Amino acid sequence: MNVINFVGHELGYIDKDIFTPEIDKEIDFLKGRMSCMQSLTKVINTKFDKKFEWYHINYRVNKLMRETYGKPQEDALRFLQIAEKDIKDNVGYFRLLSDQNTKMQNAIYISQVMISYSKKNSGCCFD
Picture 1 (tube, one colour):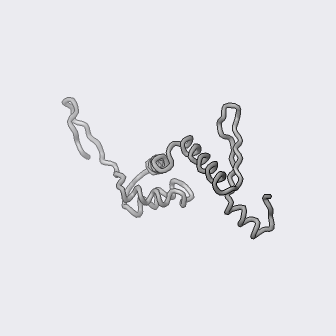
Picture 2 (cartoon, rainbow, N blue to C red):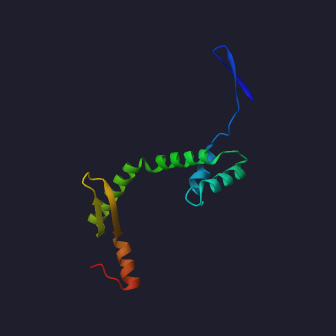
Picture 3 (cartoon, rainbow, N blue to C red):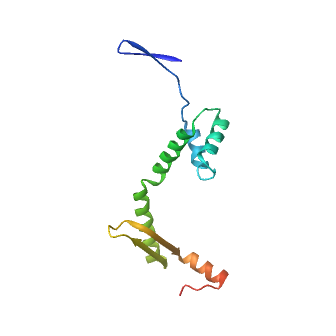
């Protein structure tokens, strides 16, 4: 146990395991490949000889997701912009369903590549 002096009082604290760039890289790589946070936690703890709790890993996964994709509403807006541009440039199909407050409810996006693949392999036609 470590001790710090705070306003004339000694406070004891226990050092917790610290996230390193290597741990973050591994969490980022494994985050969508594990069945649950407990499994991901076990793998990280074993590989790096740590004692993280599942909620520490869960927080880190969410933080990495925000850093990569932004806030969910920003990610959704980015998706809409990319889909609309691709439809204009390359043809395809895109529809958006929103509520009366213009909040996105559902969206479907089918690129020209998806359409041609579908026509070629299943006989389906989107004409």
